[in-house]
Length: 238
Image 1 (cartoon, rainbow, N blue to C red):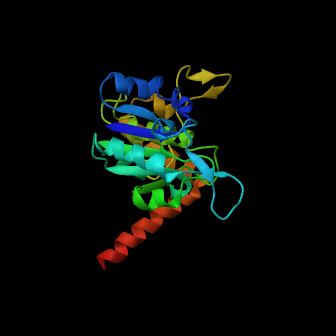
Image 2: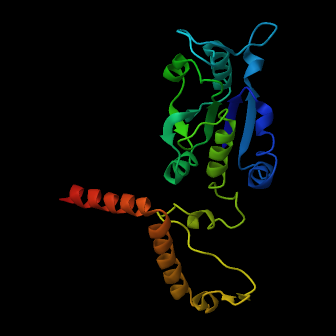
Image 3: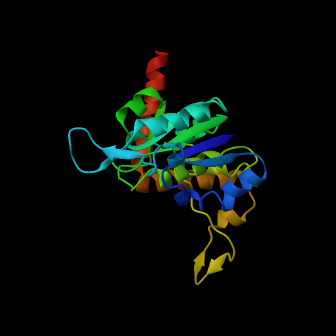
């Protein structure tokens, strides 16, 4: 997989892609991320990429021209499965979306900044708009890093144990169960006996029940979605 990211603040993305799982994925040749400075596609002495909004109002708007130059230049080098714009009013990013995006070969992510981009950018170039939550960041860079991390870790070969990603929270519509490691007892707090039993079937049963219980306590909305989905399937079969 290859991900290109367009930003006006490339230094913000130096850290996330230089360490940990994302760095290992690149070292293995499984995934690569390239950050592009939008100012490299701007003209004039100041390399301006933003301007005042028509109609007035506070804040600057990213101009269409440098963005168009950058996207068109990148499209000459590869075909993108999705051209993504990180924006608070996009579709909320979740695990199913991460699973789908992880199956693609080439992604292009545009990071919003200031008051956002000229609407014509969205109309002409963007194929998918993503938000990581109902809040506003200074720019889309950190959000793009979150999305890239969630996608890349799902690619086979990235994690040392490929089954690890399959047991993450949200993969089956539930939160992950509690986990424990040594020592088996700490200041009177004991690890559940079943996890020490070596009985795989009973351990799996305990983990499932613990997942359901934790989801019901902390994210009952997830159970509601699952039950709603099952109802839809039943109604479609009738």
